[in-house]
Amino acid sequence: MTGPRIGRRGLFGATTLAALLASAPKAFAQVLGYPRCLEGPMVGPGGPDHITIWARMSGAFEVTVEASPDRYFKAPIVSAPVTASAADDFCVVLKVAGLQPATPYYYRLRIGGKPDRYQPVPFKTRTAPRGPASFRVGFGSCCRIQFDADQKIFNAVVEQEPDLFFWLGDNIYADTTEPSGIADLYRRQRSVERMLPLIRSTPQLAVWDDHDYAYNDGDRTNPIREQSLGLFKQYWANPSAGTAQTPGVFFKHSHGGVDFFFLDDRYHRDPTGDPDGPSKTMLGTGQKAWLKAELKASKAPFKIIVCGVGWSFAETGSDSWTSYRHERNEIFDYIRDARIEGVVLLSGDTHMGELNCIPRSEEGGYDLYDFCSSPLAQVPDNDFWEQTPEVRMRPVWGKTVCFGMLDFQMGETPTLTLNLHNVVGAPLWEPLVLTPADLKNGVSTWAAKIDKDEMKRRKAKGA
Image 1 (cartoon, rainbow, N blue to C red):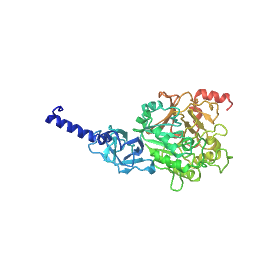
Image 2: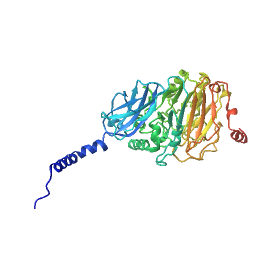
Image 3: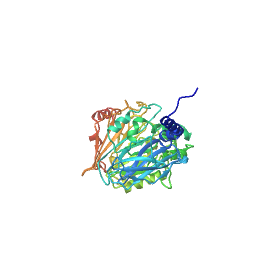
Image 4: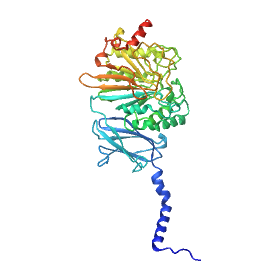
């Protein structure tokens, strides 16, 4: 018995099918496999003429970024190539230069010379303005994916349309001295779906605190502090980290005519439980000298100092500046004596939103406002609601997760508006508005700006 007769057309079809099946592994690999971007892209701090992009690759591939003012990339501007390496956990930071200021740009990755097939739609970001310009900053701290893998807070952050976003520490909860555990938590946090629209469009800047440094209340005795620092630099695209003489995560960044000074509160820190005194330090000699010099050189109307822990005096034994009073007051005295105007303080860590003030006019300085936003994705805490810092300007918020917003209006009279927002984006306080005139030696403004109920509570306590 003979089989069915195969005609010329059937033979051609069978041959073609056999060829397709033979090439299937290669074809599927091109569509579904490597190379590709595993985490990211994430926008880092840029400037008027450039953007920076962080990403983590699936292997040791050459990567570039293309940027274009149109989504069709008719005449793309291309970054210098960077080859991902195992030594950097395949993380890369790429810079696209030669761009126009305050201009939206589409961007996309090319990996091994080809577009990333897993991310076929380009992303969009914006270059920084050249010179003074109005802009908005979102910030927060304490983001624990083990507690909240969904992180709805980032929907609300995106709706506020910040031009920058700051991470003020406890950005992950590694709580380990095993470097691979820290890296794993960085990767898990970078994959949170609700966060992706924010990090792919808005420049991200960060400092750390104890839980992403190693364990709770970590200090200079951390046995893996160098490895932790290396991982931090791999997973964030900050413009710099420390100086040639002094390691750490501290750096300066300028945007829209405002200077931001980001501090490292862990790498050089003396143990919290050590007796306080003139020699006890959180920042270390080199970083403190850097901060003073940078503040002195700044001509910005607002100078924002960013630290992972609170500046206001809180509970005894806290790992905030409460346990480093001599050094804190040394910095504040320097601001006064060097006649450095326009300083505002940001902080995190406390698992509650706070807006406090440190009055300094009686010492010849001016009121220093300490704005704390916490947590982004962690259990809100009411254990410390009854603390009595120097001055509470607004009621403590500890009912939901939250984030802070800074709104800079850089007109003829610059203003800075501060407010806290909850998980649906609603403002939680009456806004606090500051001008450069409020932040000069001899000026006291807190009594005119304090919430009325907070003033009543203050008087009831005899303050």
